Length: 385
Image 1 (cartoon, rainbow, N blue to C red):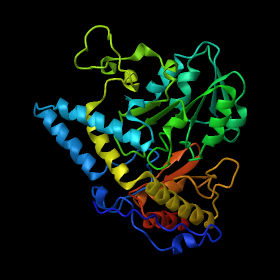
Image 2 (cartoon, rainbow, N blue to C red):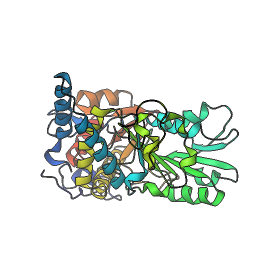
Image 3 (cartoon, rainbow, N blue to C red):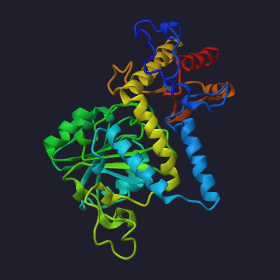
Image 4 (tube, rainbow, N blue to C red):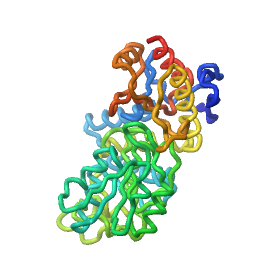
């Protein structure tokens, strides 16, 4: 695959007009996304990522074989193993610490049900419901909500768990993960990070946290139905064993009837049954993310977002800072712009530009299939309103 690993030039933060004057740069993904329809500018990865062409082809082949009566379980198993190993490498952890699931909320629920009654769980105001609601649903837990910018300072003696998204779904703001991790360690609290809006573009080390959960259908470019969990050694007791299914056994195919007498020694003991066809696709997408490299993707995505921030600011709009408390001219691949006229989304859609409206903001997200020309096209539409 002929992919360009150099990031586009970011605009000068002191010269917003440079956003459209900077030299145009191609997408990072090169020809890996040849199936994207001509005239489509996709700036909505924060809702769902687009599959690489090879991912879509692998899934079509698997579906055709299934429909023809030729399901290939060895191929399915290989895909699950490859996806698990890729995710481990991307998150800088070992494969033995990675469990698989279907949804973020389902995985978070395993942690929520294991907490002793009265445990205090600290979350960020406005964080995504799949992370928050499993704790809120337990009325015998003490759920405490604090502003994202104040989350580290809100950790206190008696806090059992801090649960936060690395990047906020509504507006792309980034959590101060080092400060949160340090505060949790100082008070004996465990940490749960939702990386669904971060893994794939933001460099992260899963071993920095007790638990990290991630849906694969956004920045990891997989389909719905695949999620991952990482478990730091010593934190296994914080997950309920009640949800261990047949795939959690040390030998899943050899012991899939009756009680499992030998759970896997690794984090696989927390696996739920894999959606095999989804893993066929996910393995291909994660392989591409690895080939491009998270550091290169981070530089590419953030530079495009910075270009857009400068351009939309020059048009008189004020994007939400990427870092709580201000100073966020860059840093996030997601840019949320509040108070844009309601017609803006319609104008963008009419021009073939896909974005999303979230929490009163118009949300733009930039990934490997985007280029500076995509940024400028969106700015042209907004500037013409």
